[in-house]
Amino acid sequence: MTRVLGAIFSVFLAVMAVVTVIIAVSHGPVSMVWNALLFFAVAVGIGCYVWRVALEVSADAVIISNPFSTRTVPLSSISAASPGYYGMALTTRDGRTFTAMAVQKGNLASRRGRRTAADQVAEAIHSAAGLRPPGGH
Image (cartoon, rainbow, N blue to C red; front, side, top):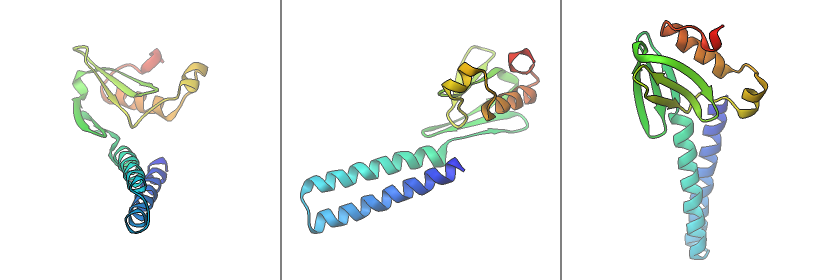
């Protein structure tokens, strides 16, 4: 649902930017054109984030799609998956960490010890990689 709302919002911003450019070019000052370009840049940024972020667990790897990169991490190399504020952190056996922005856990939920969908994703990754569940459950 968040992805759909974000997509709608980014399309709305892009339409507003186009309308603002048209009005600015035909009637207004140059500063309106810069405002329109700013709106458009924000819309593109939101669109990149909303349409681009994903985390997929396949039979042999975890595929992390962030706004500007895609990484494939083999399940056999994963030693831990832990959700956090900036995303799902996948730690490999050689110590490297990859973060998937698509799955995040808020700070308040972490402080209160509340389970979220991010915890379920971490458990699914641990299960697929043949690891013990996070937290030693």
